[in-house]
Length: 330
Image (cartoon, rainbow, N blue to C red):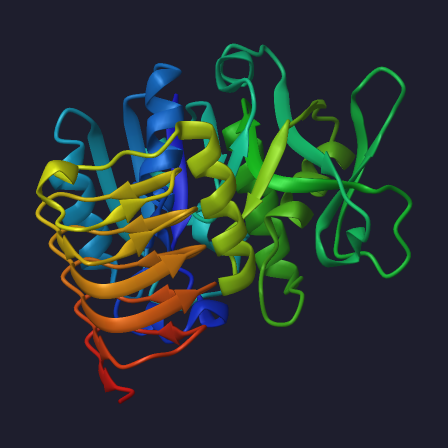
């Protein structure tokens, strides 16, 4: 079985951070979005990965090679973004006709990964949502099998959203359906939907069962990313490296602080993630994510997302600042 992780999206809702850093590499509870996904699949026994990369794809490639040298990894570039269906089709030559486990690159969920891996039937992960119109939606029979999937329906007949996790046994049929959709020019707002390809498979007789995820974390925009960071810190407990070196500093857990940080005269937490080699002095920060190699002095931060290699001096309350930025608020 091969895992396919599409991470070619530009992450426009998380700009300015995604101008210089792929969304999948934004720090989250001491890890990254991508590392959480890979670790889940790795623990379930998957060792062969295909990453569909695009803008800043070399950073994805460098990260994976540095942190997961034991895995077999392929990197395929999606130079023009025509949707998830198009992204998956780019992996066709590598997949051949093996089973595939697809996880969208911004999808973090709590679920029984091994149960899906070992399933003898193609499986789609779902979660009940209040407003399903912004998602792919699965219509599910009483036996748990899926009768129909629809991408962003105007009038939904189900409130079970597809969360972006797919185990597909009949990969040959998937690629046949994607080809049919391409030839017909079936696209929604210029994009070829993976949901439409799966619906094509269902109409051709393929069986899909549903599995409900326990929790689904939204990593698509600042507010929900910070909320996901807080929830994951509570779950993982956080990790602080070098706390004994922090002078006159109070840590309010849960927090995650990377290696090589220099922190003095500060109050950190709760629900804060700080990347490696970051300097904080006379700083109060809570409910925030701060990237690596940043420098903060005389700052009060709350509900903020700060990029890597960023310098901030002064006093403020809530910021959304990308990488390689210097700000004097004095």
